[in-house]
Amino acid sequence: MKKINIIMLIGILAFGIAGCTQVKEGMEQVLGETMESATVDSEELYRSLSSIVSAPEHIDTFHSEYVGKEVEFALYVFGEPEEYTFEDEDASDINGHKFAPASLARNNDAYFLLNVEEITQLQVEAGKYYKVKASLEGTMYSTEGGEREDIVYFDVKSMEEYIPTNREVSESTFSLSNGDVTFFDYEIIQDIYGGDVFVLYFEFENRAESEQAPIFSEIIVDHADMFLSSEGLLLTDAELKHTNALSSGGYVNDDPTPPGKALPYYISYELEDATQPICFTMYDDEFNMLNTFLINPSESSEGLTSAE
Image (cartoon, rainbow, N blue to C red; front, side, top):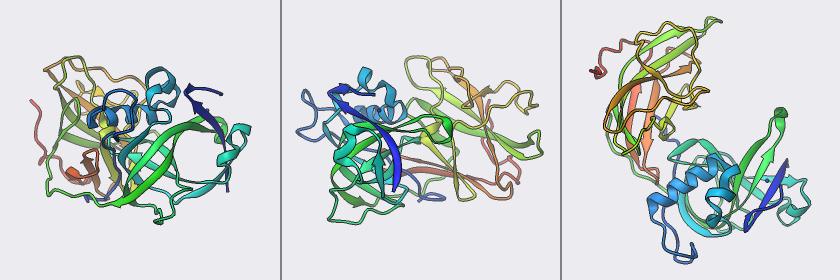
């Protein structure tokens, strides 16, 4: 039984808390009884949910209308349900309930928890896609390793298994929500310990009306049976092939691209095995595969589209 701390959300935030490999998923539309005011369309819902799970501390400021409201969306469960115990006195009504970790298609770097205690009509399993009717109820926090991590959780009212579709598409260009990313080169460099670091170069064309940086978290990166974070690595004093490329991810804010313009960027990953391929896959908000592209880092990059 896993022990974790909790913060309950009441009204607004109250008391203190397949492509190469099939991966994760997203969400959908608001139910009839959902929002107290007007209906929220699919794009607004998924955009809001992505923001909620990635920045739980801002729920009361930007997304308080979602607290306690039932919405319907698609998701990917990547871990088996597990019983949780909570130290907070206000959490006695859910103490010992089963929670399952899940993620969205458009934000694979952040995960959230599902309270599946009331789900008895099916067995919730890891590695499957579901459509759920659920309400945002609170945030939990873990202090393992000495650092606090806030995690959003939803109470699930109903859920059904969902099988997304896959398109036979393999292109080096990915259409993100704010622009197009086109891979044009890559290389392997060594870190200070002699380990292999894969550096991917891509051009980002901004289709928005304001300055934007590429939202690389919308692309799922799979290597050696592991998912790689879209934050990548922060490279310092590295001699890169394309010196004009801007850093994407890492631990600093990305430099933006002006509206209607295109700029080169790079993102880098520490590789477990440089002989194993890296798979880049993108899904829509219901985890239907839109594009998948495979790169073998040990082979030449001549086959990629060259950036101007």
